[in-house]
Image (cartoon, rainbow, N blue to C red; front, side):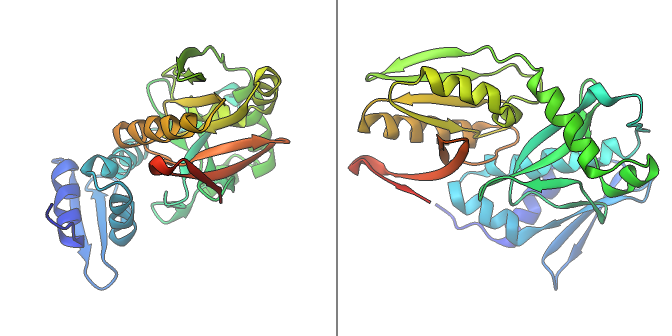
Length: 270
């Protein structure tokens, strides 16, 4: 297979993000690609080395979709007037990978660290899409980060958590796929995870391979870990906004990333 390079990544992103209103500027020294809207003169800068690292994890062009989607949504949402006050019921947490940008148009986004693999951002739901909340928006509306966080966590606990179940080789896998943009966010609903934990008879694992799925599993044997790894990687590669191909053990209210090493059925906690 032909080796991916920074320049190939740049070309693929420019092709996928081609738009009559958007212009590209390449910073060769910093290996960064900026996409800017001609009308608003606002844009997003993508660190291409980070994108290349993401690609090399899975060796699949589909892994670039996270960045494509992020840029499209960010540039589009910049034109939409947003108000937080009075829209408290529409503020939600969203899970992203730790490679996801911490700024939008050079303005810091509001976020919290979550695990070694994931980070929590906060968003205002706009119906068909949502806008990530940045520090400027907080200041403009005179709101604190803690206030936003409390609203988001309250709202995510109110989301339905219906699951589909699949039993393979004695292990049971559950999938939350509501397609409301916040399936992965349900990993932050501790009461939901705790109630699930009480039903598990083996080892409880949780995975958020991409934004639109939450996988919970009751692992009964070593084969179950291999199946979980294959499932998670498949979702990760095919997701519109990939998050992480790793799974987590859920013990005593804590999420611990685990590595599952192929067919030798060995697993290691990170």
